[in-house]
Amino acid sequence: MWLKAVAERLHFEGRRHAYSALRATLHAMRDRLAPEDAVHLGAQFPMVIRGLYFEGWRLAGKPTDEHSIDEFCERIARELPPQFGMDAKTVATGVFDVIFKELDPGAVAKVIDQLPVPLRSLWPQGARRD
Image (tube, rainbow, N blue to C red; front, side):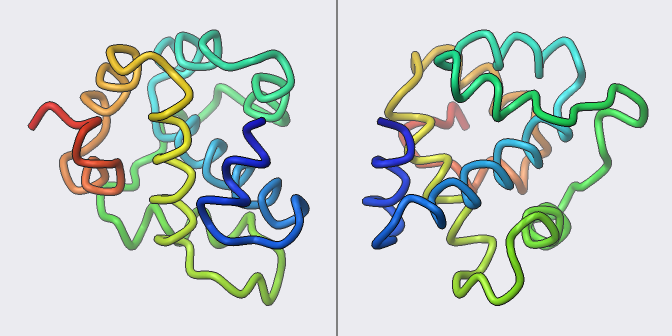
């Protein structure tokens, strides 16, 4: 369901690109959150997405210090395959739109509140409390 939603939202023909986009964005967001907040968010995901989210997670050095959209998107771009064909900001906004539609709005708002103000703008307007 989530891969299909990401593929549709970002206009991917197959799910392989949707998987890469979802994985890269989830990992960047997870690593930007305090560990306690990251765990709380992960508990909201369906089991398969939760496994993808926690894949390879290390607590050391968390949260990461990306404060600008460019820094955050560079982090996402590093996890995307070479020649991905879509910029990381578009990927992030598309994936965040899907997350907002799939999870409880209150839980999403709590996560957004933990992010630096510039990064909040990557989320759909309806998800933000600012």
